[in-house]
Length: 223
Image (cartoon, rainbow, N blue to C red; front, side):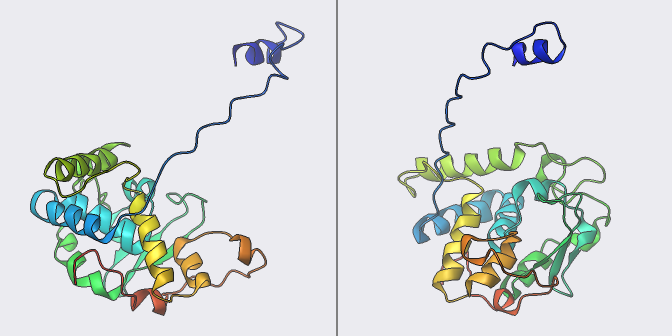
């Protein structure tokens, strides 16, 4: 990098490192939660960290990325319509998006009484609670979630937490949706992916509330 900057600044005429291949970055290990692991973590969060549970629920049920949750304002959550609007300013790909909230968690979300906070407030502000002008730190959600994992592991409820992360809830939901019979294109839409290998020529549909997601059998809690 140093020699590249020197070359671009015309201080040197040749970067001797140009043709040296870079090391391939090691692939991050990430896996899905098992049923028992889901129950153990959720039960712990219910008792000790309800706001982290809210973050987990939105990643799992709505497939909203943690980085997007950090920038989400309360006014974009419409519990009456059962959708969350994500403006392009906070999404990964820069596009506006409409995310379906499964009917099964509407009452759970209403229990947080978000209407009592200002619409312009960050949903996850300082301390991982709603805040009028300060969003939570870039590592706050992951840190709180990791703390929960370690606590549950020390208690003996989870044997191995390697590969588990906040983002693992998204992977878990994807696998469960497909196993439950939700068609792949609907899962694609719910993920807000531009394309899949098997759907490269698929024409994007207009944003809409997805009935199959609204009526899905996703559940963080034991049946």
